Amino acid sequence: MQHSVVATNGAELRSRRAAAQRTGRKNGPPARSARSTRNTYRASTAITILILILLSAPLVYTWSTAALKEYRERKREVAQLQHQLATLKKENERLKKQRDALFTDEEIEKLARERFGLVKPGEKAYVVIMNDREENDGR
Image (cartoon, rainbow, N blue to C red; front, side):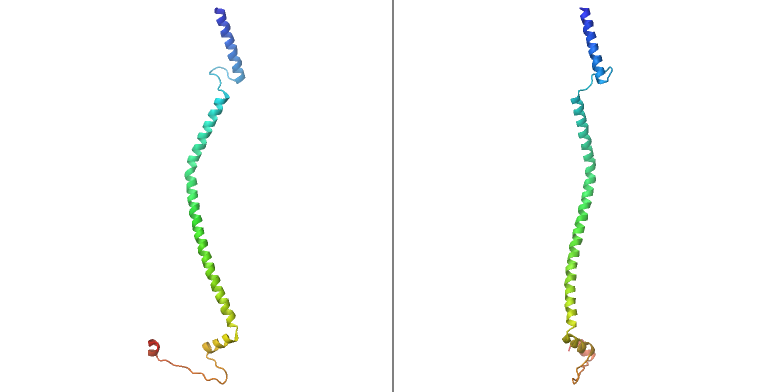
């Protein structure tokens, strides 16, 4: 019986040696299974990703808050500039109409009479002189 124990022990040793040669290990605990190694890798990868997300969250929040503030300021600025543009377009149209009116004979005559006191031949011009007290009273 002793011999069978030795034979069993010998067979067991040969089996261990063959397994060690296949895995590249000599002595020590048996090699992990591929499934166990894969699960460990997945768990460490998931933890690493979770840590990266947690560390980057404040940066993303800060960036997005600053970007949102910048966007709102630019939007307000665009609205203000659009309003200013509309006002200037109206003013431009008014000035174009005024310019076009200045080239008519009636407008030229009106300006010559009002600003320069000119009269047509045969007309008499009168100048009304008011004293200071009448100007202040509005009479």
